[in-house]
Length: 302
Image (cartoon, rainbow, N blue to C red; front, side, top):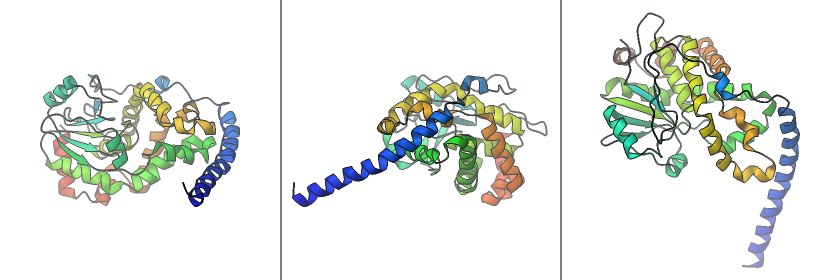
């Protein structure tokens, strides 16, 4: 190694130390204050929606996989079952899981993850299913989210709601609209998924259910069902945040990001109504024309 390269390497180490020490020092103080208000047990936040049977599909290697159908709309209609499923990552599906998806008639997979996420955990697909990458940029990188949260650690609620409203509802409207336009015109069942199936997927499903006329509190209840998978999220966070342990950042310190608090979705839906009028108006503004919206409703409502 040349002397020049040696000095560059040393300078990089010193720079990392200079940044890391104050970040750890500042964060530790905030983390201690945050522990005065521990996050609630995720299981206590689950609101059981009014539908029978439950939409959960039990897959051996699945994460948060469930049917969004079975919900009543404000005008008395019913969201059809077996048309759209929501899920977390599909990389650990077993052969028997793929057989179940095949029997469910799944023909289309919409992956909301970024390229690096998809490359790290490539999904397993049922035979003949069409796979489409529709990446959502916001809320996808856990390391970036942690550092952003560090600047706002005492206001977790505001942090998550802003992520849902500004970075998902506002910034990704055309991405969500493109998915719903395709679903309106295609045959067979579809799966919409990201890594955990609760944030990017959760907001997208909330927008769709709202456009179909499902009441807000029903949408909130559906969102909270992701808390059933909290332990899986936490175990994944343990491995992903390992590089930050030297800064004093532990998974339990950002566990609030892993929780599906009903208030997060209530405030996001309030934002939707205040800024767009309704879920239907939101999709129209995002580029779903009236005819396609009617086809979507016809396909998903009975």
